[in-house]
Amino acid sequence: MTERKTNFKTIWQRAKIRPILLLFAFQGIGFALLLFLPMGLMMNSLGNSFPFVENTERIQSNGIKANATLTGIKGIDNITINGNNPQILTYEFDNNGEKKESKFSVFEPEKTDILKIGDIIPIKHLNGKSIPTEFEQYSFSMNFMYYIAGVVLLIGLILCYLLYSKINKEISLYKTGKIAEGKIVSISHNKGFTFSKFGSSMDVHYEYGNNVAKSRTNNFALTNNKSIGDSIKILVSQDRNESCLYPELIAKINDWKENNVA
Image (cartoon, rainbow, N blue to C red; front, side, top):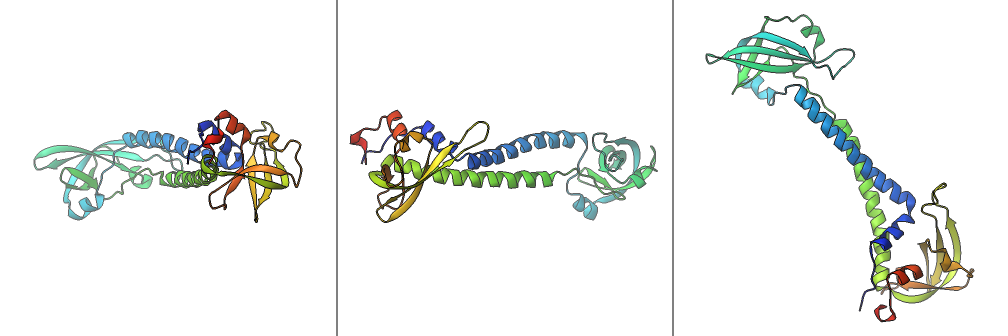
């Protein structure tokens, strides 16, 4: 069996006659990707603007108690919560005879408002990392936005799969389907998008054998001078369970010959 030739233009033609599915599929993927990119840049920028200490629970449990001298209090100006900014505490402490400086991000305005340079604050340190014991670490999170983008991306991918499954079924028939005749049962028109007319098409219901099927096309010439009850050329799968209209225009564009008809 010699398969008929198809190309990307054929696939695009089959996709664009399903404009709603095509639009929402690509909008879902595009929106998610456009959301991921600025969020990644924003998180990277914010991540560089304030320190973050990992494994604070371990330091809290196993760290060595010490006193530190507060040497700096600086607000994180690009983050405001209820009119207040998170603060970066800078402090120095003695680590085995060596003076070490650390920074810690907090958001506890009622505590930081009364702090001043030179205050002594209790800390715990472990393996060169430290945390003030009277404060909880502040971390900026946009996980909920990632969840939203992930859900939208998943919906877009599902719609893409649905679109692909419909197109792939037709492309398979284009390549290997047997030419047969069907009898037109009804013809209905789809207007597509109002202003651009993108996606305008028609659904042709037809019967062949004991089957009634529907196939969509944007080649309106197929039904010129035809009415209900007239015969129309179709392609049928080997098991005769799947079918579609024979695409006259696509056949000419791809130079389908009789000797490569399944």
